[in-house]
Every structure is written in structure tokens, then in C-alpha cells.
Image (cartoon, rainbow, N blue to C red):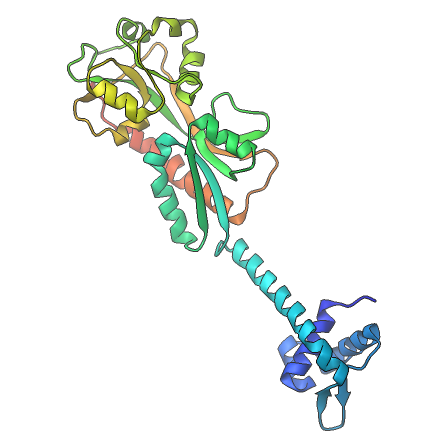
Length: 310
């Protein structure tokens, strides 16, 4: 026995509107087409569902028993269809995103604010960690996408770079290197260097970029977060290297940022997704807004950040 949804909708419509004319108008079909659907349903069930006379149509006893179930099926289908349309039009749903700490503290709030303006009823689940941790959440499919530093990458991940964030020396304003011209990493090696925790995105990038030179950066302090690093530098316990973006949350006026060269080091930040896996409509919207905010506005913003040597 094969029963089609169209046939159930026809039976429910005739039952609720009390006749073929109004039901046919509601379904936007002819009365003869409506009659054929009712007939197919009755044949499939092996029972008469409607009693017809020349003047009226009524639901048979079998039809009265069957009607609540038919209504439930039709209502559930209509609700599912409505839910899918809401998802496609980004009216409902949930998007899970991972981010590194710096972006979460600085630029991501603007991204999420614009996202919520376009999808006010969409729930956002944000997890904040190091960049390697954010990528791991995408790999485990705990996050639909990540906005972070890609680092060495992963064969199962796709990366869309949005902007480059150059590293600068951060020091106390009374430190000898504060505002130095033509500062190089060799110059930095002569001073106590506060390191980020081994395995962090920053530590990994500096190690790859500096190669053998990394061993010249010596110090007795290692921290796991930029906030702690800035605090130690603010007390003139050493110097360190941070992305320019970190300056956006620098509150201590005693801190000075100075460009470093030989080599110039920058990190690439952008959107990370699982290779070959399509995003939900909400995920696509978040990626588009990330492009607009991070890919267009941020490069200009970072270019305008004042360094001590400017």
C-alpha cells in the first residue's frame, strides 16, 4: 500500500472545508484532480473516507477514525517544511564557531553583532581557545567553522585567509628598545624575552619563522595568554613579540610597540572549515560577514595602528 502526501492533504482539506470547491481552491487544483486524489487514497486504504450526495460531502465513520492521523502527518510535514525554510533563510538554527583568544577579545564581537542583526533568532555557540585548539574543534566537528590562525594547517581543513597581522616588539616605555629604529631580532636577543607557552599558535609561528635564531631569544618567563604577557611587560620584567592586533586591547599606557624586521613576521588569520563539508546557511552567513569585517576593514585598521617609531 502506497499513500502519497498529496492524497492525504486532499482528504484533510475536504474534511476541514466541508466540500470539494473550497478544498480545491485551497490546494490550487481542479475539483476533478481533487476527486482523483481522494479516490486513490480510498483505494489504497480499501475503505470509503467520504460520503457524497448531490448536495453535500461528509466524512464517513472510517474517515473520522483516520482523519486525526492524517491531520497529524500533514501538520508535521508542513512544520518540517517551514523549519527548513527558516534554516535556509537564516531565521532559526544554531551555528557553532571556534575562535582564538585575541580575535574573541577584539574583533569577533563586531562580527557576531552584524551576524545577529541579519539572523536575530539564530543561536551562536562560541568556543574560545588557542588557534590550534580552535582548529581541533573543527576537526572534531564540534565547530562548523573557526576564525583563527591557520599555522601549519591540516590536510582535512580548508583555510580562507582574510588578513595578515604583523608581529611587533612590545616593551615598557622605559626599556632601551622602546621606539628603536630599524629594530631586528638580533637586537631583541640581547634582552630578557618573555615567551608564549610552547605549542601555542604564537610560539609555533615564531619557531618556524626564526629557525635557528629562536635559540637566541632567552628569558625566564613563559606565559599562556597575551593578557598575562602584557601585564609582565607592563612591569618591565622583559620584552616580547605580539601581533599588531593585540595592541587593540592594550590598556597600559606604559607599553610601547616597535616594528621588528630581519625577518618581518606576520600571522595569517581567516576562516577555517572542514574540507569537503558544506556549511549550513547560518554558517555561510557568518563566513560572509567575517569576510566583510575582517577581510576589508581590518587591514585598514591595522595599517592605522600607531607604532612608537611612526
